[in-house]
Image (cartoon, rainbow over all chains, first blue to last red; front, side, top):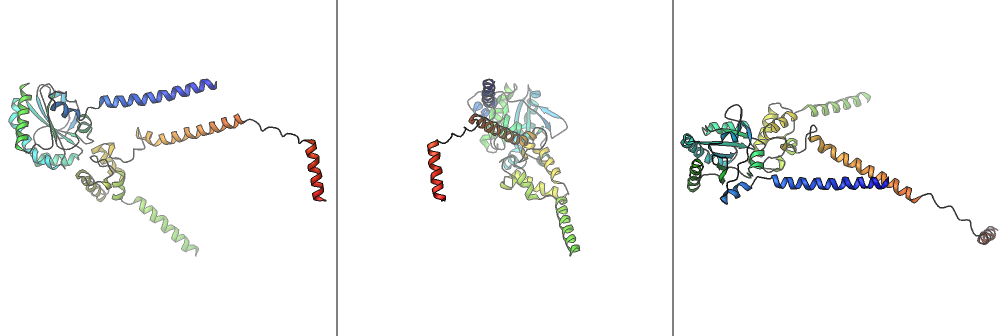
Length: 187
Length: 147
């Protein structure tokens, strides 16, 4: 009887350790964030993680995959971020100039107050779709965003063509974004 | 004297009551909420979003919100990750109960082990009778000592 009890205890202990090991493997395998920029820099075109988030510019939600067939500039920003203020008018300009060709700029407001984000949108006259990711689950966990702003250019099939870490403020960065948008529109 | 004591006690109770029902303390709240960017408590952070959250807390206190209402509002914006301690309901309850469960299992293990060890030792060995020769000598020595 005591022998059987010891076997059961050992089985439970081994099972618990195996469970922890599987949890570790699962965490490592499913961790997507941070790899997108590196993969895009190597010339790969990793698939952009899909998400559905609440919209701030109107009622309802927006699902990224619903934009398949269009090129997308996904801009992660926050109202308290200074470079975000500097690049916002440029992103609005790109959206207005290229939307007829099939470009959608999506603002991904993260780690922010909704009220502050809406004030930011009004202040800079942004007319492109804005989604709200207050906890930062999509920006940080899915896209590996560690600082704001960060911008992802996706082709018409939802693959990441280029990633911009930091504000798109310098002329060379703006030229690079336009080039990436042209490539995305050409797919 | 008795009246004075009653008055003092009453004023103490009223003071405690007034403190409990009073407005929440901003410093306490800042120690219980986490900055979503740097992931330290607000009182330890000077990140822009942390500063904005601190001003939000002060605004809500001035508007008459309770501590829970302020926390709920911040969770509504930033998710439950802003709480330095997990909520005492739903899945958060696991974090509160798990240490108690672990403590219970530990105590049970100690009790079982002690019982097992005490059983293994068995009953005390019976006393061996003294050697008759030695017993006689001890008696003689004692008699001589007392005599």
